[in-house]
Length: 431
Figure (cartoon, helix red, strand yellow):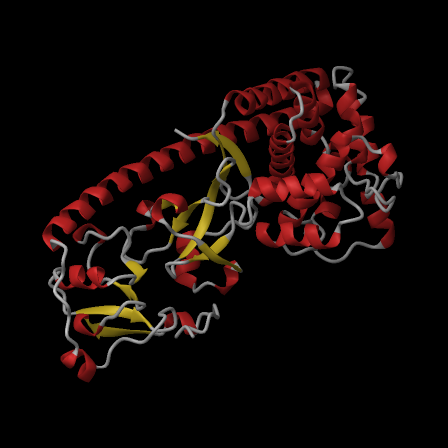
């Protein structure tokens, strides 16, 4: 029976006390009271797995460490037991092991820096795409042909990246601004839909069609008064009916641009249609909804659960996937739903998690070839936030124990990990 109770609440996670180094035992969750630079371990907070780690801590010339009692598997030794405990001689040369660990740590730090550079590069590309999206929406009313040309170039660039890389990574991006959610949502749905289309083995023509349709799927909302879109209290039945007209409004708007691909137009019209006929605006059934619309319907629902309207509360990516899987078996194409869950992984980017080491972390990216081993940003009180390690679970031999609601984190961990209120994704590749 583990010593910790498994609950994640602010009161329990602060149960720490100073413990003499000679009272430590395997299973204690500790925090070293020295700078990250001054010890050979990759993290300053971790659960002790072997006696060698305790012997290395003794060589740091420190008398005490902090032990988190709630996250320890067993309590530390009492002073009396510690005095009588016989420590077996170490077979390993601790000095040589320390040097080896420091070297390994330095190599890992360089890898962290590379990961951060990759993430920064992807964020710059994402910001450029958002700027293009903002610009083409502004152009759509006055210069629709120019807007469609800009969109085609954006989608072409994205499909080029998708199809030319064998090592794709889906990255978590920064928070969306409240007044620009339509741009973030539209780009998110386009990125995920194109990624899904590629994963399902579709050809380039269909990948680009699904991208164009997804990019403009909510364009009809430009015809809806902003005060209605931002309304905090529940909409009245007439307001709900009016909102449900946005797919038809989008089609009317795009008819002004004769360059908009005809094959993408059904996505704009049918992205809220469900296989059982319960969707809108026409209540179509499965045999009248093409495969592109069925795919975008799944992605759009997922992103809408993570980025809801003003009246609803945002779900975590993990919770959104679970909600779709449990509650939309008759409405959505189950092959598409299963593929999306497989593609994003059990813990999609943006998920806040507890690791097998007892640490808290946030999933930052998933490599589509290794979805069980996402890259994570790890909380460590002794490491400055801007230097926080982004680690590869596979390399570190760690695993995710469970997903955590961000609001259940203590305030200092919440601020450090900075969970996104609105989760946005973009594609990069492994360097």
